[in-house]
Length: 83
Image (cartoon, one colour):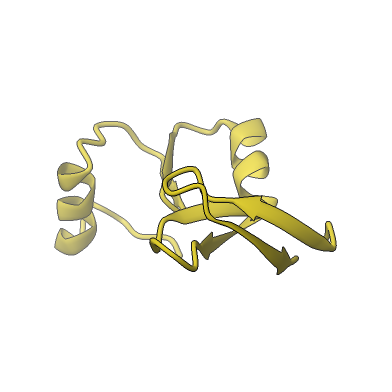
């Protein structure tokens, strides 16, 4: 979803909260990409965000890779997910 920080006070507040000073800025999951870094954007978009079943930590897993064994980087819980 595109937002214009010149007219959307809530979007402007979000950038300030995240200490983002440049535009364009892309929020993809928990990551922020400043500027038009196409390679980074594609890398981030080629994944989906899931949550650890144990601690709730959000993490990205690749699309279309079938059944995946995932280890949470926070709590080391291991679980299986389908992508």
